[in-house]
Length: 210
Picture 1 (cartoon, rainbow, N blue to C red):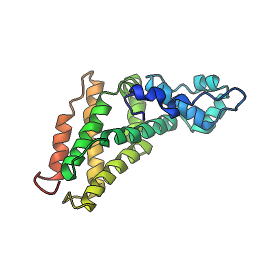
Picture 2: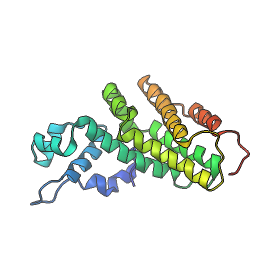
Picture 3: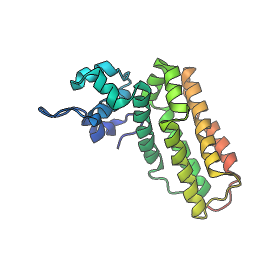
Picture 4: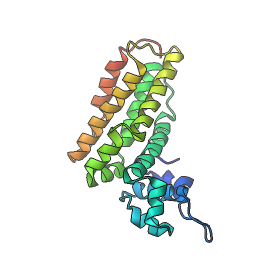
C-alpha cells in the first residue's frame, strides 16, 4: 500500500503501476488517475497536455475525465491521504486518547517527511493550499478520517470529550496544516510535536479510559 511520502511500497502499488494501458486497449479515466498519482509521487507537475500525450488522448479528453487541474490534484491527494491515514493507524495498539494522539503523530510525521508534498507545495504554493486547505475533497477526507477515529474511541467508552467531535476533527486538521505547510514554505523541517501537544490539550487530560 502506498502513502503520501511515496515510499518503496508505491513501486508495487497496482494503482500506481497500472496507468499504462496494454497494447490495443483504449486508455481510461483510471489510467489518467494512475498516471497523475505517479507524477505526484515523483514530485512532477500534473501537466494535463503532457499526460494526454503519454496516454495517447486529447487534452479535451483529459479535462473531461479530470474536470480541471485543481480537481485532479485534489483527487490524487485525497486518495493518498486516505492511504496515509491507514498507514498511520497500522500497528497502533493503544486505545482512547493515547490512540488518537499516536495516529495523529504518525500521520503528521508521514506528511511532514513527504518529498512529493514539499515539491508540490513549493512549486505552486497558491494552488497547493487552495486544493488542500479549502473546502474540498482533501479537507473532507482528512476531517472525516480523524472524526471517525475519535468517534470510534468515544463509542467504545475509551474516550470522553467535552467538545463536538466534528469541530475537534476540523481543528486537528487545521492545526496540522498550519504547522506542516508553514514550516515547509519557510524551508524548515516541520516540527510536529507542538501540534500533537495542542491536540492533546483539546482531547482533555490523560488518565481517563484508554
